[in-house]
Length: 288
Image 1 (cartoon, rainbow, N blue to C red):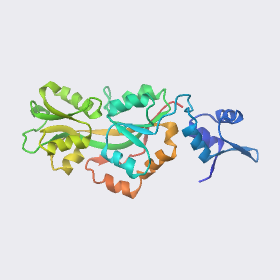
Image 2: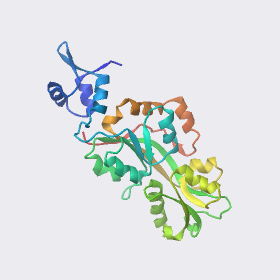
Image 3: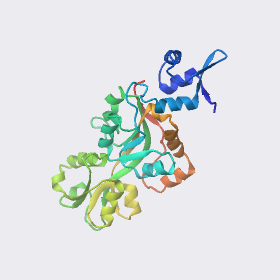
Image 4: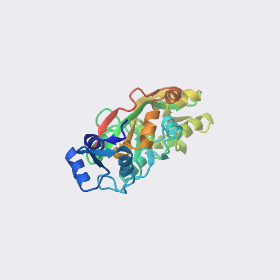
């Protein structure tokens, strides 16, 4: 890999036209050198410039190196195991999206079902990405459904009325999706005996294991791991909104590259109903 970037490579990196790169260079606003009549851009200095100049290229305040949004067990593990050095504040898809839009982080994990057409995450982001220098990158497809205590007599939504239920926080994508399906069965949260609120997928499943409740709305992988019953409801897309400039920074690239290693693939294979065959696919691209 060359230690220098060409004008075209910088333009592609920043999603701007080459003429704009020349303008920045002529005004001394971007690190560059001139050699044999060509402009060359030191790769390390460009990365440092994007990360530390104090303002993002679009004129907005730069984002802190924090991952926001929904909890995913494999993603959470990868953040640490990759040695990316990124911090995380995982408090649900809705909370994360609001914080990301307020520029409180560089990545946000979401799994929010579209309301007017089949699919996940694209409707809620459509208008925002038209104005945002962000991308939507796929991470995994996950089997989600009812995790049930064996012997509880629950066979589906029609038999959860009055049962002890572990809900997720209101900001969680899982809770949003659950209430949508609950409504389709002409039920509401008032029809359930909500005994506690869990902040993560792991916590929700363990509440069933510990006999605190009869049912929760969770991931197949935890039902399988803890020998609980599982009734599938949907296959959801867990995607990452990533700031386009942060995407090229070393810590984010380290996390993404780690997702192709044998260590990562071995860990992901432990999670039943967890499909990473399209990990890294760019599903939506925001404004240049």
